[in-house]
Length: 200
Image (tube, rainbow, N blue to C red; front, side, top):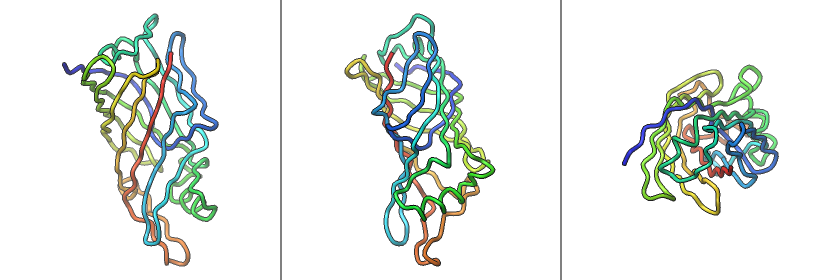
C-alpha cells in the first residue's frame, strides 16, 4: 500500500549529534542526540567530509498521536522544519572551512534549508518502509526542487530515517572551492547523507 502524505517541512543539510537544537509541539517527536547528517565530496587531491555543529528545526505532530508504525505516519507527523548555519560547517581543516563557507555565500545566505511540499511512504510491514521526500532545497540564495529517497524503520521506540542525495554545487550557483594556489580543486558533485532518529 502506498500512502500519499503532505506536510510543510524545511531542510536537509549538515548535522552532527553535538549541539543539536530541536523543538517539538505537544505530543510531538523530538530529534535524538545520536542523529547525524553530513556531506561528502572529493577533490583532485583527496576526499572530504563536512559537518555542521548544530541543526535547528521543529516537528509538528497530530495531537494525541504517538504511533511510530510506518503505516501510521500520516496520523503522527504533520510536518517539520529544519535549517543549518553555513558558519557552522566543519570540514576538518581551517582553510577548507573558510573556502567552503565563502563558496556557499554564508555572508548573504547564512542558512541552508529544505522545504518539503509532499512525501510518499511505502510500508514494508509495520516497522519499516521507504520514503520519497519532495521539496525545495535552498543553498547560497538559490532554490531548486529536490526529491530524496530514504528508508524508515521503527526500532527501540524510535523512528529512524536514513538516506542520501547527490547534488551539484554549480546548480545552486556555488563555485567549487580551489585551494593551494589551484593545486587542489574541489569536484562539483557532493553527497548529502543523513541518519535521523525521532522519539515521542
